Image (cartoon, rainbow, N blue to C red; front, side, top):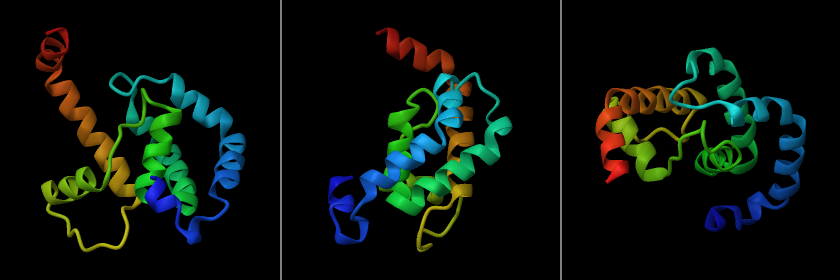
Length: 129
């Protein structure tokens, strides 16, 4: 994130993120307490998309998700450029799109939740080992 946020175009991002977190603290606290694998993600669709878009306006798409993950680690799965590109490829979407959208992020969350729930036994066994 430092490589991207260190660019001149992101000057002042720290204060803007601080203000956004303060403004959205109740929403973020609700998601911070939620468990991603057990929560009904669909219930939070509009909130997820709105928060993502707000963070994107300050940080860009990848840093937005990383920041949301840091704030709510049990709710927002982590992604980076390689994961996001692989996600688009799996869905047959063009990787030439300019930015990852709120819809991309939400779709990624749905897919990851399905993957985790479908493979829960295997993941639990590997975690135990």
